[in-house]
Length: 367
Ligand SMILES: *Cc1c(COP(=O)(O)O)cnc(C)c1O
Image (tube, rainbow, N blue to C red; front, top):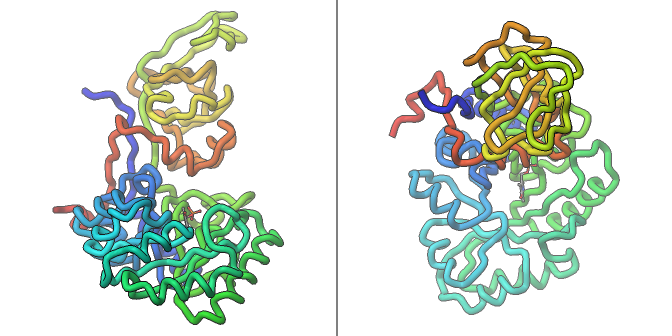
């Protein structure tokens, strides 16, 4: 028997969520964002499930792009942070990786590059997030440099939202207006919408949409649950009870001993902790499911274990299933209770958690 902690990842849910993105943005092509190991779900199997059903992939680095190519993924791959040094350029050309161009330093590198690399690049415009990208006023000049660079064959435009998760935010409206006024003049293929843009800002759909979090079945919108958006959780993080104890009133539980039993009560120990990516800051009271029913965490999260108040589950025993998030327990709720966001929880699931792919259509997974 191995340790029971594992992440079930549901290929059917992933396909379903992609379908929702397509339905919301029917005229746009889809760049599936699979950076950070597909938000912790496992880069290669995720890309294999989505391959051919999407029009491109988005990643953060050449290394992630090369992993996809090594796995046989043939679709275009965009490097959302661009390239970092000149020595990457030949590999980008060889593997058809499409860098975002967001900074003067990259223009210099391109100008000095070997000719005839025939790169497709994504010119990143800063429409108000003020993280990456060229100011709108600089765009005509940058575009001119790209068009005259022998390394570049094809230019597209992109920008990124800062606050699209908040419905009817005026800054988002302003970002859309700035981007639209830019691209109307340029006549280039363009992309603005992340998941929140796809779901809440139809004017932002344009030629390409870039869904990330919604593909994994978590809600990108403040105040709307994944279920309300018809998204299904792809990852269910689960483990089992490995000990059950009858504790006495006043017993101090776990590191620091700051949580004490208010009465004689059963406590369970589940094999999952911050060493697996379960958040150490999950507050006492954060829900988990034991045998499908909610019980609260008590005491501090350890590296390998958590302790659970089993008063609502007095018959629970060793080996009983424990779900930390996923089916039956929305990850947003756990994130809120731990002072973070679902994105971070998903990305933080560590390498010692096996990802177990559930696929009823499993011929996709061979090879
Ligand atoms: C991560 C990322 C996305 C996807 O964002 P979600 O909120 O997960 O949909 C889209 N575009 C860029 C540039 C990104 O960095």
